[in-house]
Amino acid sequence: MQKETVNETRRQIASLWASGYTVSQIARELGVSRPTVYKVVRLLDNPEASLQDGRTRNSGRPPTFDAEVRETIKLIRSKHPQWGPVFIQDYIRRHNLLPQVPSIRTIADIINELGLARKPIGPKDKRAYPVERVLEPGSITLDLWGPWHLRATKIYLVTCQDRWTRLALAVPSYSVKYGDSEAMTTRGVQENLWSTAIMAHYMYHCPSGTLRRVYCDNGVGMVPAFGHLPAPVKLALCMGATVTYIPPAQPWRNGRLERFHWTLAREYWHQQRPTKIEEAERGLVEYLNWYNHQRIHSSLAYMAPAQMLDTPIEPLPERFWEEAAAAVPDLKALPPSEISGTIECIRLVDNQGVVKLWQGQTLQLQPVLAGQYVRVEFMIDGIDRTGVGRVVWRGREEIVVAEFTHRLGVGYKQKETLVMELRFREFGASELPRNQRYDEVEYAHGEARRLFGPRPTRSE
Image (cartoon, rainbow, N blue to C red):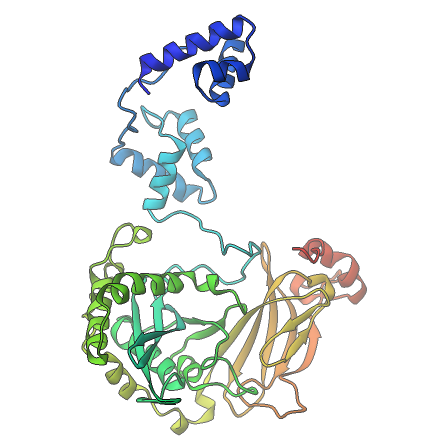
């Protein structure tokens, strides 16, 4: 709406309001909305306000800001990472940092373009997720996606993506159906595919040679079976990585990889529609190379994933998964003592203080932790001996709430348990640090409630 039309409408509203018309009558008379009438009424009640439209431009387009505005917002955000657009706009206005103060929407868009926007953990659960934020390459996420239907063939993909650079790859597997039975043209979705994905990332997308952490869900192929570690977990430990299991039934914890699945289907599969296995393989490699080396991402400041690395990397060769599978070492030939590292799982404590691990195995904590997320750490010092572990809760600081011994890596029989001896850390009054003190009564009823907050209700 032009400025002259706005000013005329405001004068008519003021005239009818002075004549005794109600807000609803004015809205029907002039064909405007009630919020518009209320806005003019508020202007009439303010003696310092003017009915004239204060806009300086008639095009209706937002003003364009130069690099100085972006650099100013970037500098303020780096000094105050917890500030949102409203606080940043107020800071600019109070300190006269710019000749023209940008709008809140403009500041939000600039923050998003710079990749500095803080995104929530997920659409359902806003509680704290006790894993450090990824700030460098070397942390990857693994997942299984499929099937893609190709005539009588079903294609499955074990996908892998770096959480920092967004470098992604996918290892295919096939299942060909003949009549009422299925014959696997390869070994199928088994442990070898997960190991191949880890090795392929290490060979082609990890020029620094450092693999820090492997995130995965609790699906078949990566989860321990009766305390025995699967082959891909052993491979990750041999490479020096920490294996982290996200909470069950919460795929948004690996939201970046889930988004890659959606992007891959939209930009490749639903566009190309391959009809042969060879065509699907070739198109998959071509798309992955384009995705990693050419496709820009707004979260990466409009750069391609490969540009996030200091060392250039080469595109993926054809059938790269065969080269990666051949490079996977024979873990059975390694001494059991060489497989060592840390395995973590993020779990929610229920209302009785029970933490559910894998295959019905549980860990009993104090009920005061109900409704909180904890990080259960299993230290593996070889797969031929029992190990130790701890339970960590993180609020403003990390607090070790319990320690235990376990059989993870060694395995356990039907009547045995994964976690053996469990003892709680001390929180009572003492000269020792807070995470090394314990008094059972005070922990259950006093000091622990001040540390962990009130016990949430079941609805939370």
